[in-house]
Figure (cartoon, protein in one colour):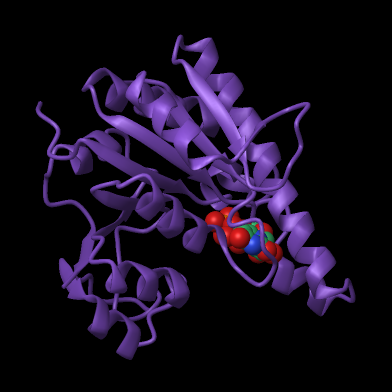
Length: 237
Ligand code: UDP
C-alpha cells in the first residue's frame, strides 16, 4: 500500500481512548490505536497526532455542573495531556519514536510546543504528539488539530471518530441517517453538522486544508485513509 499524504495530522478524540465504558482511559483501545499508528509510520508518513480529552472532562459539561468555564477548559486541556502520555507510552512500547509537545508548559512530562522543533522531529521520523489543544480556553482540540496542521504544513487533517463519517443527522440516534462521501466546507458549516467543531472547519476552509472524518474503531481504517481509499467523509473546497 502506498500513502497519498506526506505529512498529516491525526486527531484522536478522547472518546476513542475510552473504549466501551464511554469514559476514562482504556489501555486496550490505546494499544489498538497505537498498533495502527505504527502501520502508518511504517509507510514512511510524517505524523502529528492531536489528542482530545473529552473522555476525562469537557469544559462545557463541567461548567454546566458549576465549575468556572475557564478553569474547566484548562482541566480539559490537561486531560488531553494525560491521554497523550498514555498514547506515547503505548507507541514507545511498540518501538515508535515519539515526542510529546504541550501547548501548556508542563516541562516534567512534555516539551513546550515550538513549531520549528515539531518540524525537526517530524523530519527525523518521530511521531509528534500535540497535547493541550491550542493552549487557550473556549477552543477545542479539533481547532488545535487544524491549527497544528497548518503550522507544520500538513497535507490533511484526519479526524478519527466512532461513526463512519459525517451524516445528515446523528447516526447513533436517527435510523437511516445518510452518510456523505464528500462535502464542501461551506455546506458543512451551512448545515450546522455537529461532528466537528465549526471553528476548526472555518480555519481549514480559509487555508484550503482538507479534512477526512472516518471511523477509527474499524481496524485498518487509518491505513486505508492514509492510502487514499474512499473511507469516511472528505471535507474540502
Ligand atoms: N480545550 C480547550 N482549549 C483547547 C482544547 C481543548 O479549552 O484548545 C478543553 C475544552 O474544555 C474541551 C476539553 O479541553 O472540552 C477536551 O477537548 P475536546 O473536547 O476537544 O476533546 P475530544 O472531544 O476530542 O475528546
